[in-house]
Amino acid sequence: MTAALARARGIARSLAMYRAIPGRRRRMVGFYARFLGPGDLAFDVGAHVGSRVGAWRKLGARVVALEPQPDCLRVLRLLHGRDGGVVIDPRAVGASPGRATLGMSSANPTVSSMSAEWIESVTAADSRFSTVRWDRSIDVEVTTLDALIAEHGEPAFCKIDVEGFEADVLAGLSRPLRALSFEYLPFAHDAALAALDQVERLGEYRFTYSPVETMRFASERWLTRDELLALLERHRPLGRSGDVYARRA
Image (cartoon, rainbow, N blue to C red; front, side, top):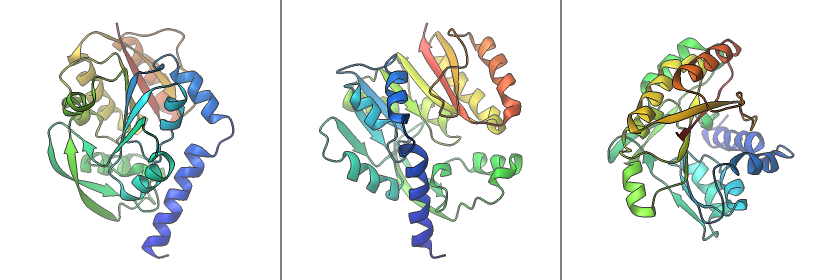
């Protein structure tokens, strides 16, 4: 298989996974309505092929979508490039501005990451990654959440999905946000704990968890840190990814 074909198939897989499931957009709109409304600003850090962007625009929110992968950028620009309510930013986000290396998987672009430690840990910890190859890398420009806020304003909600680099993204934020989410992978539990520490550094928050794109919370109420960790421990043996949500107390 040629590199170009592998990349095309990888993007097609992402589009099928995130944008072709019947009813998914409707469920997503209902889910995020608790965080976003007309005129609100949302940051999508690691926007990939823009699965959240359309739902947030349906809610009337303005969106800054950050995605450094060139193939994903083409999809974002094709789908949302003419929407004045969407800013498509080709930069990555980290602890400080500069340059960094993004390790990319042509066949599985969803697992591209700027964390070499994360790539090494998930490859060793989960057999599902045994066939994944990070077969190329690119140099990308890095900004920070603080810089994005200075440029666009403070978001009502910020989604962070950057494959093990979440704590670094949060390290570039110096003020508490109203609400945010970051990815949780059971086999990269320590990375999630580091992200959780960064959130708590910002202020007092309550938390919950949504398993693997279900658009449902796994708890009936917002939890303390200890309650969240107990909930994650119950989900950990299932080995399914998900997202931790944080809301200011």
